[in-house]
Image (cartoon, rainbow, N blue to C red; front, side):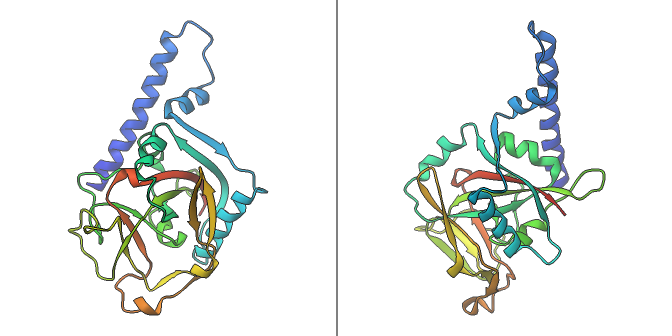
Length: 251
């Protein structure tokens, strides 16, 4: 099923290429550069961050503090604005508890994610059920990255604003979960470690305060008997997250 999902996303990317070719054939004016055509087909605005900006430095710290010893290095960071995703996300404006969380994936499906957003597929599943998985530690999500390129070391990771709201905490896996319990907005499988919360900072994004971890992972005595080494954050509504940043990384 995982292979079928990847093939489906590759097919979407190829269909974008076919749309581009058809547009070129029917165009009566000067044909734009192929890269510009591909970019427009994404219907997703990408804005490169300068390494000297405060925003870049906060994300860089988040990466360095929560990656593994030989974890990835940032090459570029783009601010992301997918068409229509902001309007969908607004239905959760009343949720104040928001956090910027990691999501790792294969390079093969990046185009599909930028085009359609993160989705809950019919066969989706894992230790915390059928939802969209995020992590507060880069090293956790980096395990799901499948790099590409001639040297096979270039990978893509996302940082998403997740409207967590009221969290339901668990320490044992339950693959049958399809939604948060009544009265809760998300489920967090609490790990034995978590980035030091006393060092968290806040980014104000479109008027909303979003928590961004800045500390190294530390032991969580309350959850020392958890079956999860690192925390996993689950939402069961696609509208509860918004892609904010795309990071090209060297693994």
